[in-house]
Image (cartoon, rainbow, N blue to C red; front, side, top):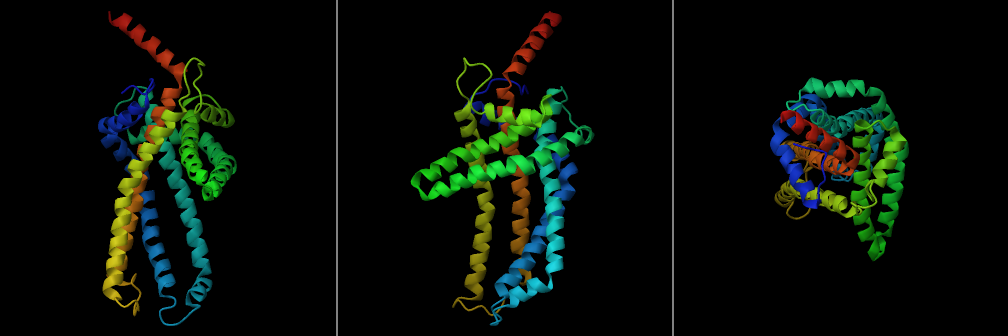
Length: 319
């Protein structure tokens, strides 16, 4: 599959699904081998951590103990802080692998590899350890604050009718800028700030002034993929809501709870379902990352010309 080529709006969507049709089994096999343990640990923390938190919060006032939850939190503050720190570290490690795995996988495809192995991806993580460290610092201290400001202003304007449309316009663009940054940082010789500059500029124009702005097709492709992911994950949310409402209706038809609805087997089923939905959302998010990769490769018109020349030279040799 040729990655560096011109694409229109429809091609971004179709090529994203074609990518998973061609490489999906190998892609997710390596992903789970690399990231599987982190995913399992995160899901376990979500299941048991949230179950305990919800049980205490929901059951705090059942017996008229108005400050039960506050007392419980104070008595277990050390556990909450330790768990919070461990969860943050685990989540950061998970996000690093989750974001950079598709970048390195597609990079290997561009290098001509078709049957990519786990060692190929791990070698990329090891050889780029320094750049990954710089990327993390840049994302935390530069990109994230700027994104929060832009999205915050857009969200604040939602009280005005136009605010909703601004938020709808800005959010996919911010997602694209962050994803382009990671693809460009590891697929070019540019530094962090140069890649950040390119990721912003490439949303609005191609290197050649003769071509129109790619903004709308990038924005539209991201929005469509986001909607697809949202609709699929909504199924799990609806399952959780139905389970909870059934439990509420059957355990307290008059609105008076005698026991915590999150306790017992129902709580386990509810939070296991929630944990699976978290796991599934991480897996589905790769639709967005690969789609962003397709858009990034479309933006690199300089490499299109280079690859076209290589193909012409190959044809000449074959003849």
